[in-house]
Length: 436
Image 1 (tube, rainbow, N blue to C red):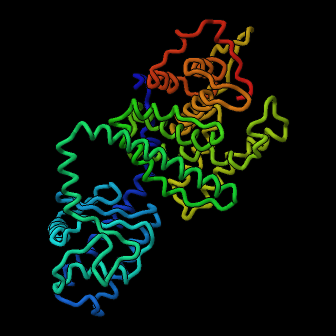
Image 2 (image 1 turned 90 degrees about the vertical axis):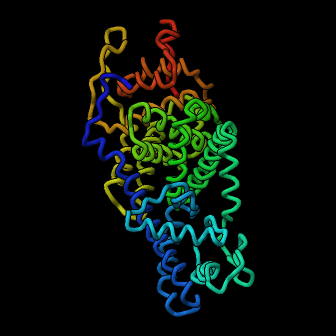
Image 3 (image 1 turned 90 degrees about the horizontal axis):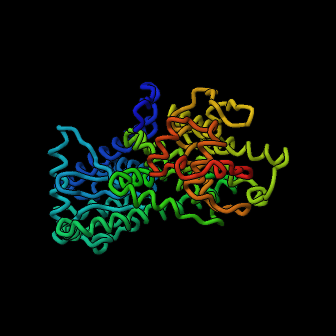
């Protein structure tokens, strides 16, 4: 991290607000779900599941589970050692609930249940069929689709014996874990590309789908980046000209996460940053294809259409349910990242002598602006070939210098392990950036 780089404390505290808010809601829902499961499993030892006493708790649990699926797109609850994990997130419980959690884990494992998975909303009848597994009258264990005669429609049961076997195998083969981690990174990357394709299709149709489902993907990116940084950055070289906007936004999100980690941002802040970056150019998908691929200068009307694209991205954010300070952060960052950092002061030869900052842009916006420009320059477009990394950074450091915070750009160069000023000659530094 740059020795002189400082992030305003007040601003820094607000950066992770969206991630913290989402995480806290998910933690609260997870704890409520575990409390509901505990009560049902304990009660079924005394009452028949068809008893009216189960009606209200089943409806409450149904509502909680469906809220989680609505927020995350799926629900995967797994018991590992003495804890529960929801979609890979450790569920934190207070001291008063630890014994209840241990009891629930014990009862689940006694019936060879290691967890449950849902990708569609659950019904109370399906929950009741699940509760039957733990009835005092039930001696057999359940299969993945439940008990004979009480099958589960959308819910799937993970067998504890299989989970335990897999955990033991993973502990015995640490070398394979590294390989699997790289494969998992590619899997998450592919999921992000697939999700963004669907999201952009919905934007073009005028009915954008909820973006919050991508939060889990971004969190996975954040976790992976800590122990697979080189491989992680290597994934950003994947580009397809015909799907430029999709790959561009995923790659920018990855670079922002690695760059932000170098700047000292926390994991919740990195998730917020990556989440905003993943949709930073979504409004561009509404532009006509001939405009996106046009060679030569744009007309005044075409420039207006391009300048309007960030407003469409902002509109999509505002169309989502609810409005909070974290929503405001997304809106401001999405709009600000297209704003130049400062005004260039040039000498008689046209060389930039200094940069006068225009306004106090947010840290997220300045990070996204750098990663956005770098990926755009290193991507092949119909009207030009891709620039090499050294050339791209030289252009950013010279002709495009007024667009970026110089301290952050210097750190970014170090993150990418490139020193462009020493690579290019004076003549090469005069490359044109028109048509970018």
